[in-house]
Image (cartoon, rainbow, N blue to C red):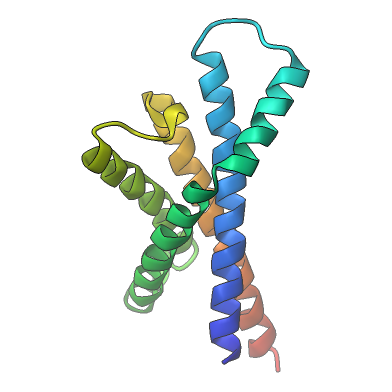
Length: 148
């Protein structure tokens, strides 16, 4: 039961962390794509607007992470040397896959900051960060348990 709760908390924490970083990066890539000088205040306002209005992307990240982290947990048992990087790799793969599936479905990437190569990579890095956060949350409980 505690493992399941820790997994769900990790999933939620990792998803929120990835979403926040992905939204911030998306905003910056969109604003920089126009080549127009934008004040810090306007950048901040647009970034906050994107964070508060890209909720469907959070749901997509959550679903993608659920699948990816379950697969990574199974693979970690068979490939223990990957244990330190399994979740960041899974998070990066989850975001890349989600963006690819969005492109296949809509014939465009709805996350406009991810339409360039560097923008896509920035979203994948946000996924890796979310995987790292997930790993820190779930492994924290395992380390505490092993000392008892």
